[in-house]
Amino acid sequence: MFYLDLKQYIQSDKIDEILKKISCSDDIKKEKERYLSVLDNAYKLYGDGDYHFISSPGRSEIGGNHTDHQHGHILAASLNIDNLVVVKKNNTNIINYKYDDIVLKPIDISDLEIIEEEKNSSYALIRGIASRIKQLSYEAGGFDAYCDSKVLVGSGISSSACFEVMICEVFNCLFNEGKINPVDRALISQYAENVYFGKPSGLMDQMSISVGDFVAIDFKDPNNPIIEKYDFSFNDFGYELMLIDTKGDHSDLSEEYSNIPNEMKLAANALNKEFLADCSLDDFIKNISDIRKQVNNDRSLLRAIHFFLEDERAIKQKQAIASKDIEALLKLMRESGRSSYEYLQNVSVYSRPKSQAIALALASCETVLKEKGAFRVHGGGFEGTIQVIVPNDNKEELKKLMISLFGDDCLLEVSVRPAGTITVI
Image (tube, rainbow, N blue to C red; front, side):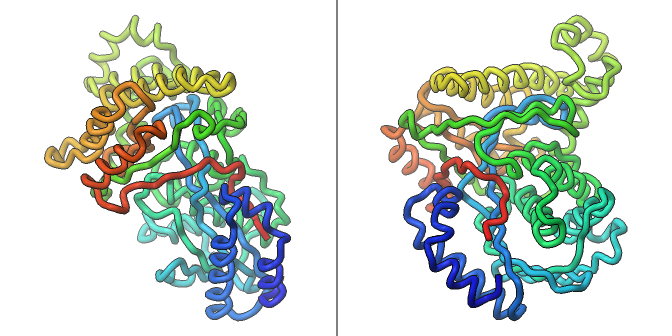
């Protein structure tokens, strides 16, 4: 839709329902103003054209901390915090992309080889997504895009996967008539992150963002994951989902993240398996002495034990959600947090003993909540965010405490949105 027609369309009531759905609010005036501002910025940069809007949400992991890369079970939800991009074809092989005040240098996707200098960058992700799309016999071409990013880097709601799935949906919308389904979008995005970006991530982030809603995913066959959606809201039970940014230093943590799947695989390999999901806890414990001698890494064994217990917990959490048993769910989430802290050991970085922000946040939450609600490390861990399911009666006390520790902007109060990454217009 061209600029003037699109402005009128946004100002009408024709997108009211979809905006209510993805913003989780009946007050959509502010959201419409955002759409118009993003469109105006794109028009100033790129001129007129047939524009489309795409919204890609952040995600919150509810259960299954570091189980996805071992082909286990997870529970996650898409959030009402998103990246909003307006985009049009430019009939070249050049991709022009600006977000907020940052302009990427033009990317020529005539060349889809891996470029070592681009690793760990947005350029690598875009090139990797375009490459995989073409490998799968879909189309990819040049486009002009302007993005308003609410899923901030380091916010703990998976900014990288949000960006990846968004770019994949841009190619899907502009060049493939929406034929790439949500599961394949997630797989394409993971490929770009693993192969081009250089991070051996699992599939939880991309899949939950692409599919949307409250989802339980079984990654036993990662190319054909079993996905179940659930209608569930913490708000219905008097709780709120809150993420707390502890303002940790995210630099130089790639090795810490990579060590988790690598060390879990060491334990699996000792049982002649590639992934821990192909092993059993019983076999592991029966052979733990021999495994310890072979692996020569006690942390590898602890992380394997975390996987077995956490994978079982994720299944029980799904059952608690299906039966709307909030107390069982919260108990399991607290257990998950303790396991991540004690066995997975992704709450702090050993080389930074004076930096214990996540541990401090968790300990402080316990002083307020005790056995009420739930609190746990969120996502990859080491530095970044914690997740809190806080009872409404304790919310203000907890907020005051967290702000005193981590600043006025440390709190992110979110809702689960019932849609994943979508083309809005």
